[in-house]
Image (cartoon, rainbow, N blue to C red; front, top):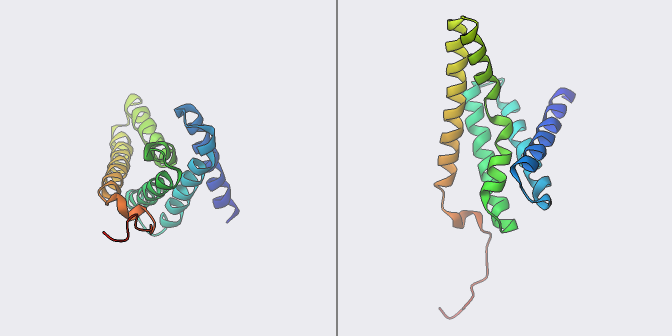
Length: 150
């Protein structure tokens, strides 16, 4: 349990750090960190029972849902939260190891890790597309009608 909490905290910090590099305004850092941390928590909770690509897809859906929700609430582009929040889920280590195994002439390991990284990247893309196809009005709360007579 403490190990999972440390990982979520590290995802929060890494997401905030990436937000700094990405040029996100300072007032949005806590929201970006929260989105990245929650996304990583979902990934960790789903990993024991599912494959990495399914866990990545589900975590991506949560990250994008939160990104769109915060974008509406904070009146800013969802991209600020999306790019920063997706950072912990990107399969960078898989790509690194695929390149390493290729250079060290371990082609079966290169194919295995490379294919896993591609599956993770495709899961991220599908999660983004899935949530961005949802109508924007779903992310707005109930609002009073401007003109009651119409």
